[in-house]
Length: 93
Image (cartoon, rainbow, N blue to C red; front, side, top):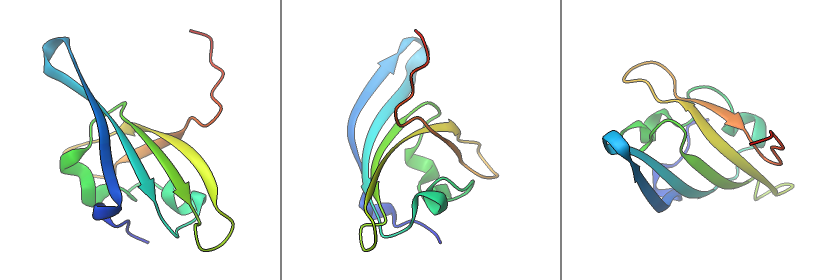
């Protein structure tokens, strides 16, 4: 169930105060939405990821394709990278 790092492409980066980086990525996979949102799925790309970065993904390409917007909740030095599905997030600003 591991993702393919070469299918994850950074499309934009923003540097905030304190040299904090937030990136935007594009990703496509044959894995399902449930698999992609599983803790640890993005571990193989840990070095390129930062907390709060966004991944715009098309999942289950070979089945029933679906768009999902993912925010990286945690990117620890060890342990699992965790995600949050923010597709259609309507949280007030």
